[in-house]
Image 1 (cartoon, rainbow, N blue to C red):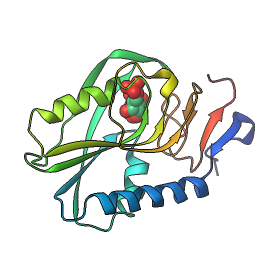
Image 2 (image 1 turned 90 degrees about the vertical axis):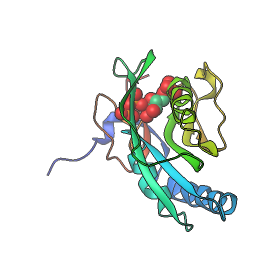
Image 3 (image 1 turned 180 degrees about the vertical axis):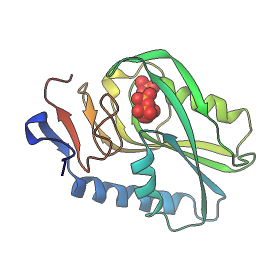
Length: 181
Ligand code: PRP
């Protein structure tokens, strides 16, 4: 049977599945407390956030609706472009409702900024952001991050939904790959 990743491809495990699971539980508890009695729509950003969204919504114990958008910005395997493309929009009516965007990573912030502006056109009651990872050193535009799982440096990360050249999304840990910066 093929394996997800050879151990020599991984330079460092930054966050293993257990650490991620604990943090996702903590974020879920914060979200539960913040949205009691609210009409919450959770919007996962494909593809990267599909794993985090699936885990996080199962730690939220208030009634929610779940939807997804797909946004694309990376032009090479590791680099972003300034242009963000919406390739799948939300189907749920978000007008007058509380929206929580679920991101796997906020890097330059361009994707999240674009999405917030795009959703605000429909006049939701509120838009907040929960990102599992945040790279402050790379941020170029200001985005309000209400919930952050972990801060990371400039290193390129893969696993737990995040890809390198389309692969590694199914790795349970978040890793730095050898030779990929
Ligand atoms: C990644 C990630 C975020 C975005 C963050 O998506 O999932 O959505 O980049 O980068 P930014 O803050 O610099 O805009 P990507 O475009 O790689 O698509 P994917 O999620 O489908 O892998």
